[in-house]
Amino acid sequence: MITLIAAGIGLLILVAITVGIVEAAQAPTWRQIAAERRARWEARQPQPHGLDPYAGSTSYDDSDDESWDDD
Image (cartoon, rainbow, N blue to C red; front, side, top):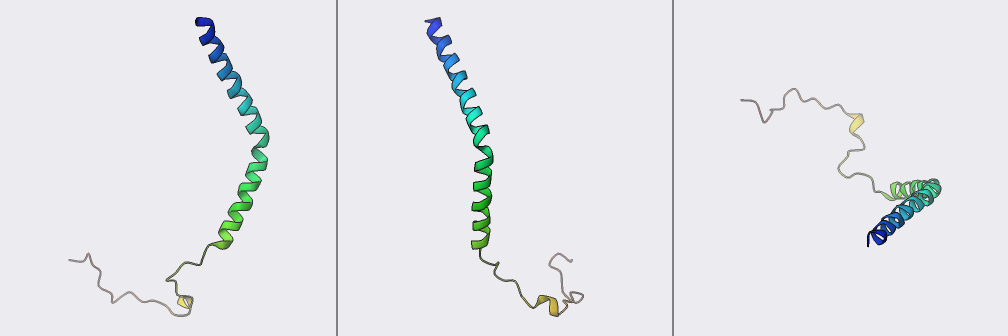
């Protein structure tokens, strides 16, 4: 029974090592795929709403605004 448990643990360790080696070998490929997907995703994102495209043409003066936390 102890031999069976030891063999199972040994098999798990062997599988973990094999998976680690295979994943390390394929990591650069997956990073490249992820970078391409992210670039496509960023290109599809809409522009943020509510931003005034002409905000830079006029200055905002907040000297006469009342602040909500002034007592």
